[in-house]
Length: 241
Image 1 (spheres, rainbow, N blue to C red):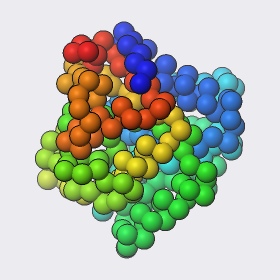
Image 2 (image 1 turned 90 degrees about the vertical axis):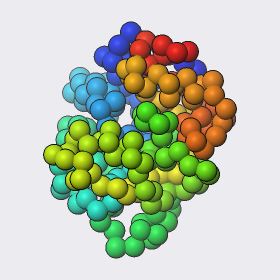
Image 3 (image 1 turned 180 degrees about the vertical axis):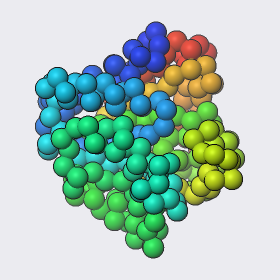
C-alpha cells in the first residue's frame, strides 16, 4: 500500500486526476471504476481540464460506477447518474454506451446486480478503481458488517451514512435508505486502486484502513490485501498516521 500525503484537497485532486489520466494515456481503452460524493469532484474537474487541453481522450474508455441509490430515477438531481453527467460525462467525449451505472429503478435488483457483474467481466475487468471512504470506513456502499459482501448487491445504508448524505437533500427523510453497490470482491479484483480522503473527519477511518486489523467492521481495511493500492490523503486526513 502506497501512501501519498499531500498538502490539501486541491493537490489531492490533481494527483488523482494525473493517475487516472496516465492510465488512459497508457491504455486508451481502459476500464475505470468511478466514485461519487464531494471527495472526487475536484478530480473530475481536473480531468475535464486535461481533456480540454487535449491531454486525454475518452473515446475508447469504459466506466463503471461503484453505486447508485435504490429508488432514485437517473434524472433525479440527487442520483449518482445525474452527478456523473454533471461533473464529468457531459464535459468529455466518452461514448454513452461505454458508461455503466447501476439502475436504481430496476424492477429486479437481483438481475440488475448479476447483469452489472457480467458487464464488468465482459469488459475485461476494471483496470483502475477510484474510491472514496466514509467516516465509518465504507467503500462504495459496503457498510460495516459481520461479513464482506462479495459482488454487486443491494445494501441497507447505515444511519451514519444517511446522516452524512442528508446534506445533499432537503431533509434527512428524503435520503434513500437502500443502494446498489459493487461488493468487496468486485472492488478487490480491480488491477489498481486509488483511495482519496480529505479532512480530519476521515482521519480515524484512514488510520484504521492502514494500521488497523482487517475486519468487515472497517470495510476499507481489506485494501491492505490488495497488491496495488495508492492512498492519496491530505495532511488532515493523514493526521493520525
